[in-house]
Length: 295
Image (tube, rainbow, N blue to C red; front, side, top):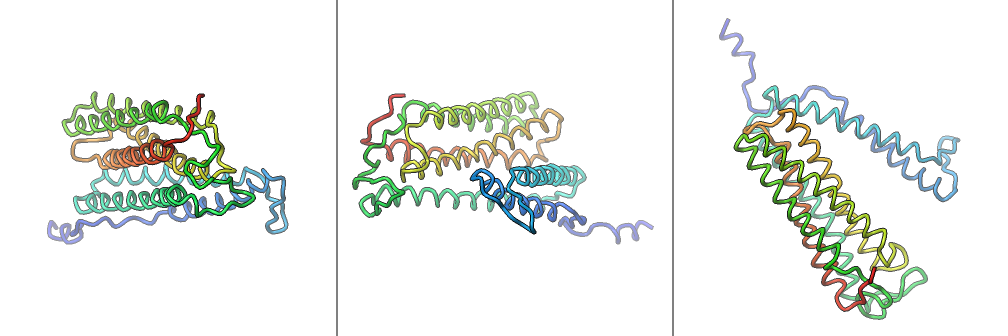
């Protein structure tokens, strides 16, 4: 009897996933969001969006797609957490999860390479950009003539210190978890989430008082795309860490089973490093020599 049980038991280190509806629902939600984004833009412009004989120019299609995606994320990750608690995440599976996170961060790096490429292409060769009816004249210099830049030693420096502190607190939380110090883990994560919220608020305030807009200037376009894309990642990372904080409060991590938090910490350190490049390249070097906005 024992031999029969052993023969039918799991004889490998891999995780054979049960049939799941979440990949299909995620694709469906993303498709509805794509249609909804077009419908929302048409609605914003006061134009119709005809599909299958109906005018779908409304923001609610996007909201529906977003709701499906968010629910799918919650349910799918809940299943992943449950599978890990049931022992499906063997050392081999855990290693592959780490490889997957590394590849994801590498793909994110390439996103930022695109924004930096656009910024340096415009800033290093301002004389080669042709003035059109929609692009402000650069005057052959960078920053373009007539642009007032943000003081890098004011709010940008404050946000730099904020993110560096958050990198310290998340590292403290990680070491606390490895030492099975649950109180310090929760404290470190709470501080990190709080610092992430402060960063997002300060950046929102900075955008609201910026002396230049997204449209009408290549400087504004490249600035807001690069810093705004990073700000979006800070928001995502803050949510990621907030979920880890809830799990830590519930006792969901152990010194040996904590890849969810480890992935969040990697992501947060990636966000920190990208911000340092943004701060020195766009705020400091990219605004050098231009008049500084007094506001």
